[in-house]
Image 1 (cartoon, rainbow, N blue to C red):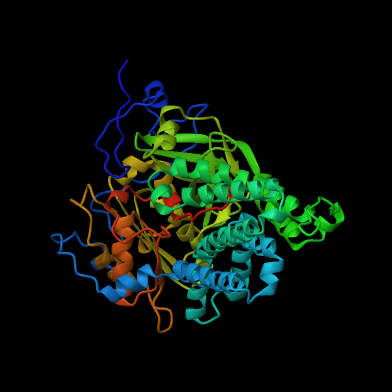
Image 2: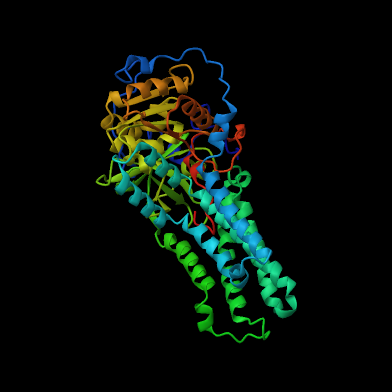
Length: 528
């Protein structure tokens, strides 16, 4: 038995791989329709010399690769210390000040109700990652502030929504810190506490610490399955332990050293209702989980295009999994609108999960019927914008350009029509006129372009919004995202890129393609 072949990045296209589906049907990448295949759209070829957009200067062949310009330390600092870190710093600092006041005896409330501060922080951390709450926030902002408010306000709204993970991480870390203080105080008075209270307190701290550790960038970005399994299942265990610890601490009376408090007393405590709220925030998204029909098109061994029923608004992401509760992977949704019959996901073959979509295509797959909003969902706030993406990052970008005539698409990839197939090409050509896109085929044009050069040219062409130019959304790999963000910052162009939370500025090993799941921040207690 031969060993399984290795897969390269979806943009490289250097390895021929045969899946059972491709072996059984070698003409799958063509438009011939079979009873079990999905419909694909006949489209015109992306010819090498076809005009890319009205301004001729936008689509010039690339000059020799320029030397990378050195970015100022100030720009690197401004990009690094983004709204996520500002939220984390503010949230964590406020809590640390409170812990200091409580530990020194200057905050009687915290000493009397430490459990409320523990579970209150954890409750708010989970709320920031609740999909329903997130959709309501995006709906509120997009409804009230679109177009008419000052651009700086709208940019602030987008930045806040994108970086809510900073509040999530800050509150989760603070909750554990408050719990440690609470247990330390109990051990100081351990002669008045039952051993079971102390034991469950330690167990709860350990479980929550493992949950947070599993969500650290070094784990999350390099070992996704380890992160998700531990973060979810230890998170659920932590929720259970929080319930046990909350009930024990509120039914035990340290004054009389007896279990003499009634259930009515427990229900009246703040910690009980915070824990109840946290439980509801965790459970609600899971009731939307369904196993649904999926059609998979394999235009090449490097990409799987998944088709689901019903249309979607732009700027949403889908989580899919082969099992009900194990690893869920996030991908940008491509759809022609809420009226459409289908929506699509582009899955580049990079990890075990995406490889399995090619080697063993499922007929049904688990997903959340309620989709969560990504930063692109705020594109309705702006009068004009540019969506620049590489490779499979098109999945997070295309819907915005299809559903809004005021957004311009720049897509950089290798052998795009052959790699991504006629369905994706058809969506581009049917809905975007040649004046609204630039498709850069690095294989046809001899390499990647100077991204900032073509972005600036397209930016100048795509008109201005008052005194400030159009917004730019970026979906690329880590290095490409950093370069474009730095270039935009230096040029004074407002831009939002893929979020890797607390990843350091130089992580070359993360140059693995534009997998949009990297945009997700940590989801406490297994919300992801």
